[in-house]
Length: 517
Image (cartoon, rainbow, N blue to C red):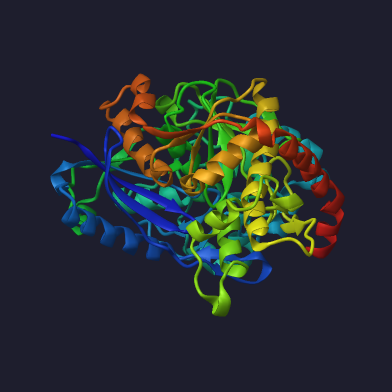
Protein backbone atom coordinates (compact mmCIF):
# COMPACT_ATOMS: atom_id res chain seq x y z
CA UNK A 1 0.00 0.00 0.00
CA UNK A 2 1.34 3.45 -0.93
CA UNK A 3 2.14 5.48 2.18
CA UNK A 4 1.29 9.17 2.26
CA UNK A 5 2.31 12.29 4.15
CA UNK A 6 0.04 15.16 5.11
CA UNK A 7 2.38 17.95 3.99
CA UNK A 8 1.99 21.61 4.95
CA UNK A 9 4.03 24.39 3.32
CA UNK A 10 3.30 27.56 5.28
CA UNK A 11 4.54 30.35 3.02
CA UNK A 12 4.23 34.00 3.91
CA UNK A 13 1.31 34.21 1.48
CA UNK A 14 -0.54 31.36 3.17
CA UNK A 15 -0.43 27.58 3.55
CA UNK A 16 -0.25 24.98 0.82
CA UNK A 17 -1.65 21.69 2.03
CA UNK A 18 -0.93 18.50 0.13
CA UNK A 19 -1.14 14.72 0.19
CA UNK A 20 2.26 13.46 -0.92
CA UNK A 21 3.63 9.94 -1.06
CA UNK A 22 6.75 9.16 0.95
CA UNK A 23 8.54 8.99 -2.42
CA UNK A 24 7.49 12.48 -3.46
CA UNK A 25 4.41 11.97 -5.65
CA UNK A 26 1.94 14.82 -5.09
CA UNK A 27 -1.59 13.49 -5.54
CA UNK A 28 -3.58 16.46 -4.24
CA UNK A 29 -2.90 19.99 -3.01
CA UNK A 30 -4.50 23.37 -2.32
CA UNK A 31 -3.24 26.84 -1.48
CA UNK A 32 -5.07 29.36 0.68
CA UNK A 33 -4.03 33.01 1.05
CA UNK A 34 -3.91 34.61 4.48
CA UNK A 35 -3.98 38.21 5.62
CA UNK A 36 -0.82 40.02 6.68
CA UNK A 37 -1.45 43.02 8.90
CA UNK A 38 1.03 45.87 8.68
CA UNK A 39 1.15 48.57 11.35
CA UNK A 40 3.28 51.20 12.99
CA UNK A 41 6.91 50.78 14.02
CA UNK A 42 7.59 48.01 11.53
CA UNK A 43 4.76 45.70 12.59
CA UNK A 44 4.02 42.75 10.26
CA UNK A 45 1.81 40.02 11.72
CA UNK A 46 -0.45 37.10 10.85
CA UNK A 47 -3.06 35.14 12.80
CA UNK A 48 -1.82 31.57 13.53
CA UNK A 49 -5.37 30.43 14.25
CA UNK A 50 -6.27 31.34 10.66
CA UNK A 51 -3.46 29.03 9.47
CA UNK A 52 -4.76 26.14 11.55
CA UNK A 53 -8.39 26.43 10.48
CA UNK A 54 -7.35 26.55 6.81
CA UNK A 55 -5.11 23.50 7.25
CA UNK A 56 -7.82 21.45 8.97
CA UNK A 57 -10.45 22.29 6.35
CA UNK A 58 -8.05 21.62 3.47
CA UNK A 59 -7.00 18.25 4.89
CA UNK A 60 -10.58 17.04 5.17
CA UNK A 61 -11.28 18.28 1.65
CA UNK A 62 -8.18 16.54 0.30
CA UNK A 63 -9.15 13.21 1.80
CA UNK A 64 -12.60 13.60 0.29
CA UNK A 65 -11.45 14.63 -3.17
CA UNK A 66 -8.46 12.32 -3.63
CA UNK A 67 -8.06 8.56 -3.60
CA UNK A 68 -6.03 8.72 -0.37
CA UNK A 69 -7.69 7.37 2.76
CA UNK A 70 -6.97 8.59 6.26
CA UNK A 71 -5.38 5.23 7.16
CA UNK A 72 -2.82 5.68 4.37
CA UNK A 73 -1.49 8.88 5.97
CA UNK A 74 1.47 7.59 7.97
CA UNK A 75 3.21 10.90 8.64
CA UNK A 76 2.71 14.64 8.96
CA UNK A 77 5.35 17.22 8.09
CA UNK A 78 5.48 21.01 8.08
CA UNK A 79 7.74 23.43 6.26
CA UNK A 80 7.50 27.13 5.52
CA UNK A 81 8.55 30.60 6.51
CA UNK A 82 11.15 31.00 9.22
CA UNK A 83 12.70 33.76 11.33
CA UNK A 84 9.13 34.38 12.54
CA UNK A 85 7.78 33.95 16.07
CA UNK A 86 4.51 32.62 17.50
CA UNK A 87 3.89 33.08 21.26
CA UNK A 88 1.90 30.09 22.57
CA UNK A 89 0.58 28.73 25.85
CA UNK A 90 1.44 25.35 27.38
CA UNK A 91 -1.02 23.57 25.05
CA UNK A 92 0.43 25.19 21.92
CA UNK A 93 -2.44 27.63 21.34
CA UNK A 94 -1.36 31.11 20.21
CA UNK A 95 -1.63 33.89 22.79
CA UNK A 96 -0.78 36.63 20.30
CA UNK A 97 -0.19 37.14 16.58
CA UNK A 98 2.75 35.68 14.70
CA UNK A 99 5.52 38.25 14.27
CA UNK A 100 6.71 37.72 10.69
CA UNK A 101 10.29 37.69 9.46
CA UNK A 102 9.76 41.25 8.18
CA UNK A 103 8.56 42.56 11.57
CA UNK A 104 11.05 45.07 13.01
CA UNK A 105 9.21 46.24 16.13
CA UNK A 106 12.08 44.97 18.29
CA UNK A 107 14.78 46.96 16.50
CA UNK A 108 15.54 49.21 19.47
CA UNK A 109 16.07 46.23 21.78
CA UNK A 110 18.12 44.31 19.19
CA UNK A 111 20.43 47.28 18.73
CA UNK A 112 21.03 47.36 22.46
CA UNK A 113 21.78 43.64 22.46
CA UNK A 114 24.12 43.39 19.44
CA UNK A 115 24.54 46.87 17.95
CA UNK A 116 27.82 48.67 17.45
CA UNK A 117 30.16 50.38 14.97
CA UNK A 118 31.19 47.42 12.74
CA UNK A 119 28.51 47.09 10.05
CA UNK A 120 25.99 47.87 12.80
CA UNK A 121 27.39 45.33 15.30
CA UNK A 122 29.42 45.33 18.48
CA UNK A 123 32.66 43.68 17.25
CA UNK A 124 33.22 41.56 20.36
CA UNK A 125 29.68 40.26 20.38
CA UNK A 126 29.80 39.69 16.62
CA UNK A 127 32.96 37.59 16.99
CA UNK A 128 31.42 35.53 19.80
CA UNK A 129 28.23 34.86 17.89
CA UNK A 130 29.86 34.02 14.58
CA UNK A 131 32.43 31.74 16.19
CA UNK A 132 29.75 29.71 17.96
CA UNK A 133 26.61 29.82 15.83
CA UNK A 134 27.83 31.03 12.45
CA UNK A 135 25.54 34.08 12.38
CA UNK A 136 24.22 36.84 14.58
CA UNK A 137 20.80 38.37 15.32
CA UNK A 138 20.08 41.43 13.22
CA UNK A 139 20.10 44.90 14.80
CA UNK A 140 17.00 45.57 12.67
CA UNK A 141 14.92 43.32 14.94
CA UNK A 142 13.66 41.27 11.97
CA UNK A 143 14.32 37.85 13.51
CA UNK A 144 13.28 35.73 16.53
CA UNK A 145 15.61 37.49 19.00
CA UNK A 146 14.16 40.87 18.01
CA UNK A 147 10.65 39.46 18.26
CA UNK A 148 11.21 37.91 21.68
CA UNK A 149 12.77 41.09 23.03
CA UNK A 150 9.85 43.13 21.66
CA UNK A 151 7.33 40.89 23.41
CA UNK A 152 9.29 40.95 26.67
CA UNK A 153 9.71 44.71 26.81
CA UNK A 154 6.81 46.15 24.79
CA UNK A 155 4.04 43.52 25.07
CA UNK A 156 4.40 42.21 28.64
CA UNK A 157 0.78 41.05 28.68
CA UNK A 158 1.51 38.68 25.77
CA UNK A 159 4.82 37.60 27.29
CA UNK A 160 3.09 36.77 30.56
CA UNK A 161 0.64 34.42 28.77
CA UNK A 162 3.32 32.79 26.62
CA UNK A 163 4.86 29.49 27.72
CA UNK A 164 6.89 29.06 24.53
CA UNK A 165 8.11 31.20 21.64
CA UNK A 166 7.95 28.99 18.56
CA UNK A 167 8.87 29.23 14.91
CA UNK A 168 5.74 28.76 12.74
CA UNK A 169 6.78 25.24 11.66
CA UNK A 170 7.31 24.26 15.29
CA UNK A 171 4.01 25.85 16.32
CA UNK A 172 2.09 23.77 13.78
CA UNK A 173 4.05 20.66 14.77
CA UNK A 174 2.95 21.29 18.36
CA UNK A 175 -0.66 21.73 17.25
CA UNK A 176 -0.48 18.26 15.69
CA UNK A 177 1.38 16.53 18.56
CA UNK A 178 0.90 18.61 21.71
CA UNK A 179 4.69 18.49 22.13
CA UNK A 180 6.81 21.66 22.30
CA UNK A 181 9.93 20.94 20.26
CA UNK A 182 12.41 22.62 17.96
CA UNK A 183 15.62 21.60 16.21
CA UNK A 184 18.91 23.14 15.22
CA UNK A 185 17.51 23.73 11.74
CA UNK A 186 14.22 25.33 12.81
CA UNK A 187 16.02 27.61 15.31
CA UNK A 188 18.66 28.68 12.79
CA UNK A 189 17.48 32.29 12.54
CA UNK A 190 17.65 32.78 16.31
CA UNK A 191 21.40 32.02 16.31
CA UNK A 192 21.20 30.71 19.88
CA UNK A 193 22.78 27.27 19.38
CA UNK A 194 26.46 26.37 19.18
CA UNK A 195 26.48 25.07 15.62
CA UNK A 196 29.97 23.65 15.87
CA UNK A 197 28.37 20.65 17.58
CA UNK A 198 25.03 19.74 16.04
CA UNK A 199 24.76 16.72 18.30
CA UNK A 200 24.48 18.93 21.41
CA UNK A 201 20.74 19.47 21.89
CA UNK A 202 21.03 22.56 24.08
CA UNK A 203 21.01 26.31 23.60
CA UNK A 204 24.34 28.02 24.13
CA UNK A 205 24.15 29.76 27.54
CA UNK A 206 26.60 32.49 26.52
CA UNK A 207 24.58 33.43 23.42
CA UNK A 208 21.29 33.30 25.30
CA UNK A 209 22.73 35.65 27.94
CA UNK A 210 24.06 38.06 25.30
CA UNK A 211 20.69 38.11 23.52
CA UNK A 212 18.67 39.03 26.61
CA UNK A 213 15.83 36.63 25.76
CA UNK A 214 14.05 34.55 28.40
CA UNK A 215 15.67 31.10 28.24
CA UNK A 216 12.73 29.26 29.82
CA UNK A 217 10.54 30.23 26.85
CA UNK A 218 12.83 28.54 24.30
CA UNK A 219 11.42 25.16 23.18
CA UNK A 220 13.38 21.95 23.88
CA UNK A 221 15.63 20.79 21.05
CA UNK A 222 15.27 17.42 19.31
CA UNK A 223 17.37 15.97 16.47
CA UNK A 224 16.71 17.39 13.00
CA UNK A 225 14.90 14.92 10.78
CA UNK A 226 13.45 12.94 13.68
CA UNK A 227 9.94 12.00 14.83
CA UNK A 228 8.48 14.44 17.39
CA UNK A 229 5.54 12.17 18.25
CA UNK A 230 2.21 10.79 17.01
CA UNK A 231 -0.73 12.97 16.07
CA UNK A 232 -2.93 13.70 19.06
CA UNK A 233 -6.10 11.51 18.90
CA UNK A 234 -8.41 14.53 19.00
CA UNK A 235 -6.51 16.19 16.16
CA UNK A 236 -6.43 12.96 14.13
CA UNK A 237 -10.23 12.75 14.48
CA UNK A 238 -10.61 16.39 13.48
CA UNK A 239 -8.44 15.85 10.38
CA UNK A 240 -9.74 12.40 9.46
CA UNK A 241 -6.34 10.65 9.60
CA UNK A 242 -4.95 7.80 11.68
CA UNK A 243 -3.78 8.63 15.23
CA UNK A 244 -0.75 6.42 14.54
CA UNK A 245 0.58 8.93 11.98
CA UNK A 246 3.94 10.24 13.11
CA UNK A 247 4.85 13.92 12.99
CA UNK A 248 8.40 14.73 11.90
CA UNK A 249 10.38 17.80 12.89
CA UNK A 250 9.35 21.04 11.23
CA UNK A 251 11.66 22.30 8.47
CA UNK A 252 12.38 25.82 7.23
CA UNK A 253 11.51 26.22 3.56
CA UNK A 254 15.23 26.21 2.67
CA UNK A 255 15.58 22.68 4.02
CA UNK A 256 12.40 21.29 2.49
CA UNK A 257 13.22 22.79 -0.91
CA UNK A 258 16.74 21.35 -0.75
CA UNK A 259 15.18 17.90 -0.43
CA UNK A 260 12.38 18.69 -2.88
CA UNK A 261 14.84 19.91 -5.52
CA UNK A 262 16.76 16.63 -5.29
CA UNK A 263 19.98 18.55 -4.57
CA UNK A 264 20.87 16.76 -1.33
CA UNK A 265 24.51 15.81 -1.91
CA UNK A 266 27.51 18.05 -1.24
CA UNK A 267 27.81 20.96 -3.69
CA UNK A 268 24.59 20.24 -5.59
CA UNK A 269 22.99 23.67 -6.00
CA UNK A 270 19.45 24.91 -6.25
CA UNK A 271 18.10 28.45 -6.54
CA UNK A 272 14.62 29.55 -5.53
CA UNK A 273 12.50 32.38 -6.89
CA UNK A 274 9.49 32.56 -4.62
CA UNK A 275 8.27 35.55 -2.64
CA UNK A 276 11.92 35.89 -1.68
CA UNK A 277 14.98 34.25 -3.28
CA UNK A 278 17.97 32.24 -2.19
CA UNK A 279 20.72 29.95 -3.44
CA UNK A 280 21.91 26.92 -1.50
CA UNK A 281 23.76 23.63 -1.50
CA UNK A 282 24.83 21.11 1.16
CA UNK A 283 28.31 21.76 2.59
CA UNK A 284 30.40 19.80 5.08
CA UNK A 285 31.62 22.49 7.47
CA UNK A 286 30.46 25.47 9.51
CA UNK A 287 31.52 28.73 7.83
CA UNK A 288 30.49 32.40 7.77
CA UNK A 289 31.15 35.31 5.40
CA UNK A 290 30.05 38.37 7.38
CA UNK A 291 30.85 40.71 4.49
CA UNK A 292 28.53 38.97 2.02
CA UNK A 293 25.87 37.88 4.52
CA UNK A 294 26.31 34.19 3.77
CA UNK A 295 26.76 31.36 6.25
CA UNK A 296 26.29 27.66 6.61
CA UNK A 297 23.26 26.73 8.71
CA UNK A 298 22.44 23.41 10.37
CA UNK A 299 21.13 21.03 7.72
CA UNK A 300 18.23 18.57 7.92
CA UNK A 301 20.22 15.88 9.71
CA UNK A 302 20.57 12.60 7.86
CA UNK A 303 18.14 13.83 5.20
CA UNK A 304 21.07 15.41 3.28
CA UNK A 305 24.55 14.24 2.44
CA UNK A 306 26.34 17.00 4.38
CA UNK A 307 25.80 18.43 7.84
CA UNK A 308 25.17 22.04 6.76
CA UNK A 309 23.41 24.07 4.09
CA UNK A 310 24.61 27.34 2.60
CA UNK A 311 22.20 29.99 3.87
CA UNK A 312 21.42 33.41 2.38
CA UNK A 313 18.29 35.36 1.52
CA UNK A 314 17.12 38.07 -0.85
CA UNK A 315 14.00 39.75 0.48
CA UNK A 316 12.06 40.38 -2.73
CA UNK A 317 11.87 38.23 -5.85
CA UNK A 318 8.41 37.02 -6.89
CA UNK A 319 7.10 39.73 -4.57
CA UNK A 320 8.37 42.25 -7.14
CA UNK A 321 6.23 40.80 -9.91
CA UNK A 322 3.21 40.79 -7.60
CA UNK A 323 3.84 44.44 -6.70
CA UNK A 324 4.27 45.35 -10.38
CA UNK A 325 1.06 43.56 -11.32
CA UNK A 326 -1.00 45.20 -8.59
CA UNK A 327 0.51 48.68 -8.66
CA UNK A 328 1.63 49.43 -12.21
CA UNK A 329 0.49 46.87 -14.76
CA UNK A 330 -3.28 47.08 -14.15
CA UNK A 331 -5.16 47.98 -17.28
CA UNK A 332 -7.63 50.78 -17.86
CA UNK A 333 -10.00 51.18 -14.96
CA UNK A 334 -7.84 48.92 -12.83
CA UNK A 335 -8.88 45.75 -14.67
CA UNK A 336 -6.93 42.71 -13.46
CA UNK A 337 -3.77 41.60 -15.24
CA UNK A 338 -2.37 38.09 -14.88
CA UNK A 339 1.24 37.06 -14.47
CA UNK A 340 1.02 35.34 -17.85
CA UNK A 341 -0.11 38.66 -19.38
CA UNK A 342 2.91 40.42 -17.88
CA UNK A 343 5.46 37.82 -18.97
CA UNK A 344 3.96 37.65 -22.47
CA UNK A 345 4.32 41.42 -22.73
CA UNK A 346 7.86 41.25 -21.30
CA UNK A 347 8.83 38.80 -24.03
CA UNK A 348 8.20 41.51 -26.64
CA UNK A 349 10.97 43.68 -25.14
CA UNK A 350 14.55 42.79 -26.13
CA UNK A 351 17.15 41.47 -23.66
CA UNK A 352 18.27 44.41 -21.56
CA UNK A 353 14.80 46.05 -21.62
CA UNK A 354 16.14 48.82 -23.85
CA UNK A 355 18.47 49.95 -21.10
CA UNK A 356 15.96 50.03 -18.21
CA UNK A 357 17.36 48.59 -14.98
CA UNK A 358 15.15 47.58 -12.05
CA UNK A 359 16.54 47.18 -8.53
CA UNK A 360 14.24 44.78 -6.61
CA UNK A 361 14.77 45.91 -3.00
CA UNK A 362 11.12 46.59 -2.13
CA UNK A 363 11.57 45.71 1.55
CA UNK A 364 15.31 46.13 1.89
CA UNK A 365 17.92 43.45 1.37
CA UNK A 366 19.67 40.72 3.37
CA UNK A 367 22.23 39.05 1.06
CA UNK A 368 24.80 39.83 -0.23
CA UNK A 369 24.27 43.10 1.67
CA UNK A 370 22.22 43.53 4.83
CA UNK A 371 20.41 46.83 4.41
CA UNK A 372 16.81 47.17 5.56
CA UNK A 373 16.71 50.73 4.18
CA UNK A 374 17.40 49.79 0.55
CA UNK A 375 14.49 50.35 -1.82
CA UNK A 376 13.44 49.34 -5.32
CA UNK A 377 13.41 51.53 -8.38
CA UNK A 378 13.41 51.75 -12.18
CA UNK A 379 16.52 53.40 -13.57
CA UNK A 380 17.38 54.85 -16.97
CA UNK A 381 13.72 55.27 -17.96
CA UNK A 382 13.17 57.49 -20.99
CA UNK A 383 10.27 58.83 -23.06
CA UNK A 384 10.71 55.79 -25.29
CA UNK A 385 10.31 53.29 -22.44
CA UNK A 386 7.28 51.05 -22.85
CA UNK A 387 5.30 48.95 -20.42
CA UNK A 388 6.86 45.91 -22.06
CA UNK A 389 10.30 47.27 -21.15
CA UNK A 390 9.23 47.85 -17.53
CA UNK A 391 7.74 44.34 -17.36
CA UNK A 392 10.92 42.71 -18.62
CA UNK A 393 13.08 44.93 -16.40
CA UNK A 394 11.33 43.50 -13.32
CA UNK A 395 12.16 39.94 -14.37
CA UNK A 396 15.73 40.92 -15.24
CA UNK A 397 16.19 42.91 -12.03
CA UNK A 398 15.40 39.86 -9.91
CA UNK A 399 17.83 37.83 -12.03
CA UNK A 400 20.56 40.49 -11.69
CA UNK A 401 20.06 40.33 -7.93
CA UNK A 402 20.36 36.54 -8.09
CA UNK A 403 23.62 36.88 -10.07
CA UNK A 404 24.91 39.22 -7.35
CA UNK A 405 24.08 36.48 -4.84
CA UNK A 406 25.66 33.82 -7.08
CA UNK A 407 28.96 35.71 -7.01
CA UNK A 408 28.85 35.73 -3.21
CA UNK A 409 27.88 32.05 -3.11
CA UNK A 410 30.74 31.00 -5.38
CA UNK A 411 33.20 33.04 -3.33
CA UNK A 412 31.82 31.26 -0.26
CA UNK A 413 32.09 27.73 -1.68
CA UNK A 414 35.27 28.31 -3.66
CA UNK A 415 33.76 26.59 -6.70
CA UNK A 416 31.66 27.32 -9.77
CA UNK A 417 28.04 26.46 -9.09
CA UNK A 418 26.76 25.05 -12.35
CA UNK A 419 24.16 23.82 -13.21
CA UNK A 420 21.44 25.37 -11.06
CA UNK A 421 18.15 23.65 -10.32
CA UNK A 422 15.50 26.36 -10.26
CA UNK A 423 12.41 26.11 -8.05
CA UNK A 424 9.67 28.39 -6.73
CA UNK A 425 6.73 30.15 -8.32
CA UNK A 426 8.97 32.27 -10.57
CA UNK A 427 10.31 29.13 -12.23
CA UNK A 428 6.85 28.50 -13.72
CA UNK A 429 7.73 31.15 -16.33
CA UNK A 430 9.80 29.82 -19.24
CA UNK A 431 10.91 33.37 -19.96
CA UNK A 432 12.10 33.97 -16.40
CA UNK A 433 14.04 30.68 -16.43
CA UNK A 434 15.80 31.72 -19.64
CA UNK A 435 16.53 35.20 -18.29
CA UNK A 436 18.14 33.63 -15.19
CA UNK A 437 20.23 31.34 -17.41
CA UNK A 438 21.34 34.26 -19.62
CA UNK A 439 22.11 36.73 -16.85
CA UNK A 440 23.83 34.22 -14.53
CA UNK A 441 25.56 32.46 -17.46
CA UNK A 442 24.61 29.09 -16.00
CA UNK A 443 22.65 26.09 -17.21
CA UNK A 444 19.27 26.12 -15.46
CA UNK A 445 17.31 22.92 -14.88
CA UNK A 446 13.72 23.62 -13.93
CA UNK A 447 12.19 21.20 -11.46
CA UNK A 448 8.76 19.94 -12.52
CA UNK A 449 5.92 21.66 -10.65
CA UNK A 450 8.39 24.16 -9.17
CA UNK A 451 5.72 25.84 -7.07
CA UNK A 452 5.21 22.58 -5.16
CA UNK A 453 8.85 21.85 -4.39
CA UNK A 454 8.32 22.44 -0.67
CA UNK A 455 5.43 19.96 -0.50
CA UNK A 456 7.45 17.36 -2.40
CA UNK A 457 10.38 17.97 -0.07
CA UNK A 458 8.22 17.39 3.01
CA UNK A 459 6.98 14.11 1.56
CA UNK A 460 10.45 12.81 0.66
CA UNK A 461 11.92 14.06 3.96
CA UNK A 462 9.29 12.09 5.86
CA UNK A 463 10.07 9.10 3.64
CA UNK A 464 13.75 9.41 4.57
CA UNK A 465 12.92 9.66 8.29
CA UNK A 466 10.63 6.62 8.09
CA UNK A 467 13.22 4.78 5.94
CA UNK A 468 10.90 4.45 2.95
CA UNK A 469 13.58 6.21 0.85
CA UNK A 470 17.38 6.04 0.71
CA UNK A 471 19.41 9.25 0.39
CA UNK A 472 20.99 8.08 -2.87
CA UNK A 473 17.52 7.80 -4.45
CA UNK A 474 16.40 11.36 -3.80
CA UNK A 475 17.74 13.00 -6.96
CA UNK A 476 16.06 10.41 -9.17
CA UNK A 477 12.72 10.96 -7.42
CA UNK A 478 12.58 14.63 -8.48
CA UNK A 479 11.61 15.16 -12.15
CA UNK A 480 13.10 17.98 -14.23
CA UNK A 481 10.92 19.28 -17.08
CA UNK A 482 13.11 21.89 -18.73
CA UNK A 483 16.71 22.84 -19.48
CA UNK A 484 17.68 26.44 -20.25
CA UNK A 485 21.16 27.15 -21.58
CA UNK A 486 22.68 30.66 -21.68
CA UNK A 487 22.30 32.42 -25.02
CA UNK A 488 25.74 33.80 -26.00
CA UNK A 489 24.03 36.58 -27.98
CA UNK A 490 22.84 38.21 -24.74
CA UNK A 491 26.19 38.01 -22.91
CA UNK A 492 27.58 41.47 -23.75
CA UNK A 493 24.29 43.24 -22.99
CA UNK A 494 23.74 41.55 -19.67
CA UNK A 495 27.37 41.84 -18.53
CA UNK A 496 27.31 45.58 -19.26
CA UNK A 497 24.07 46.08 -17.33
CA UNK A 498 25.06 43.89 -14.41
CA UNK A 499 28.22 45.93 -13.95
CA UNK A 500 25.95 48.86 -13.05
CA UNK A 501 23.76 46.88 -10.65
CA UNK A 502 25.94 46.80 -7.49
CA UNK A 503 27.15 50.31 -8.32
CA UNK A 504 23.56 51.52 -8.12
CA UNK A 505 23.30 50.17 -4.59
CA UNK A 506 26.60 51.70 -3.49
CA UNK A 507 25.74 55.10 -4.94
CA UNK A 508 22.27 55.15 -3.36
CA UNK A 509 22.79 53.54 0.04
CA UNK A 510 23.29 56.82 1.93
CA UNK A 511 20.15 58.23 0.33
CA UNK A 512 18.25 55.08 1.34
CA UNK A 513 19.44 55.53 4.92
CA UNK A 514 18.42 59.19 5.02
CA UNK A 515 14.96 58.63 3.53
CA UNK A 516 14.07 55.48 5.47
CA UNK A 517 15.16 56.22 9.00
